[in-house]
Structures are given as C-alpha cells and as structure tokens.
Image (cartoon, rainbow, N blue to C red; front, top):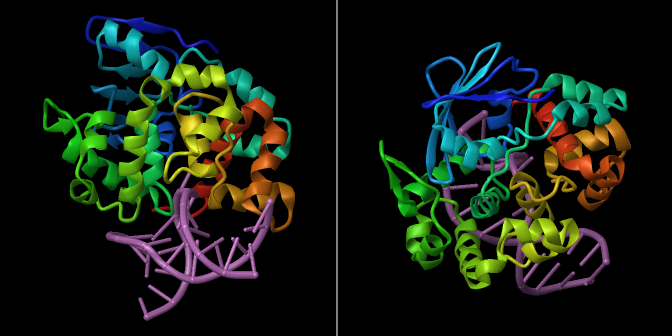
Length: 292
DNA sequence: CTCCAGGATAAAC
DNA sequence: GTTTATCATGGA
C-alpha cells in the first residue's frame, strides 16, 4: 500500500493507515532508536531528530504528525521511510512459517532513516548494555553536549561538540567504558570530515562501508550492522546480537553456532531484505520474554 | 550475592 | 584465524 500524506499548515495526516500498516509504538520501541518517549496521551510520542521536535499521534485509522509542510518534506517523510512499500517487502519475506509468524506479531514495524552520527554514537553506547540504560545514556549525552531546543530539550550533539568534549564530561552520561569509545570515535569522525557521509556510504555499498565503520573504536560487526541498517545505508545488514542468535538458532538452525555463522546464515537467507527480516525476528524474540 | 544486558578489544592460543 | 578475560553500570 502506498502512504499518501496530506499536508496542512501545522500538521500532516497519513490517512487510512492502521497499526498493522505502520505501528509507531513498535517502530519506536523496537530498539532501533532511543530518543522517542511515550506521552500520556494515548498513542502519542514525542521525539527529536535533525534538531527538530515532533509529536506523533496514532489512532486505529490514521497517523498525525505535528509539523509544518517544509519539515515534513525535508525531514520526516524520509525519516519514517514513507516512500518504501512495506507490503511488498513483507510479502517477499513471508516465505516460511517462521517469518510469517514473526511478521504477524509486529506487522507495523518500519525501519527509520536516522542521522548517521547519532546512530553511530548511539550504537557504540549500546554494546553489552540494555535498551533502558542506553536510552538514559543518550539522553544524558544530549543534555551534556547537545544544543538546547525550546522546552528544555536538546538536540543530539554535533560531531564537533563530542569530538571537542572533555572525557570527564562524556563520562557523566554514565556509559562506563564506552565513553572512551565515544570520544575517540568522534575524534576520528571529525578527522574524516566530508567522507563520513551517508550518501557516500550508500554508493560505497554494504561490505566496504562496514569495513570502514569498523575502523572506529567500539564498532564491531554487530554495531556496524546497526549503524548501516538504522541510518538507512543498506538493508543487507543483519545485526546479530544475543536475541537474534537465540531465535535464529531456535527456529532455523536448530543447533548452537557462532554469532558469525548466524550473521552469514541470515544474509544468505534474506539477501537485501535481511535488515527487515532481522527487525521482525528481533521484536518477535523479545515480545515473548521479559525485557528491560 | 550472582547473572545479564541490541559487544568490542587486546592479549593469548 | 579463533577463544578468552576484561571492561562500567544498573537492574533483576
């Protein structure tokens, strides 16, 4: 199905969209992003990206975004991946009983196209941590180094801000040993200048981009795949963490194997849709367990 | 108290 | 090239 946004002066409506088409809850809470908070108002979220604030509201029949036409066209249309037809993707992935079940458990998940630097730092912070704590670390990092936005909120810090920050300041976000990675990666990225660029990485392709990203401190296979997938560089990425390993072994492979084996297995099986498949599987694995 | 969390690293084999 | 101890913090 094609999403047809209707643009008004102060808001945008996605009409005839059910939570099975797009679920902002599943999309925001599936661990790909860390800066969207649930509001008291039923089905509403507040978040910041590209230095802009946004409130999103979902009902059974439509989604409403409180932004002007310009920001929607410049930022949010792409951020929410609205040009991509997910029905097509889901149909291709529903080849076996397992993916069929996984997709049915969260059919409204979408992959967000997030800012490259934010995604990089966020997933460096994620290593051997949990979503709840990562969220807090990122929030603190924004408060410490981000540009203030009206309402007491902060933009995600710039490359310059993080690269020039004192390690003691970075340490205040309580990301522990990862603070060191955050600092040195930011400095390396600053030195890369123009070449740390999403468009360039899209052209470069999955393999070469991953190789380059893994030169950064704190970026291994898993984190590199998260950066590539969640910043919208390539959907061939297949972030393989303990959850994905667990469910892939349990449902497909039927034996205990290495992380690397699961990564290759997933990419061979799902090809350039591996990233989408991974999201459905990750959510499916976690939805049947206690998560923090 | 121990164990685990969207792992990566350097050292050791 | 592949295992292993260690890393800082909070929650269960």
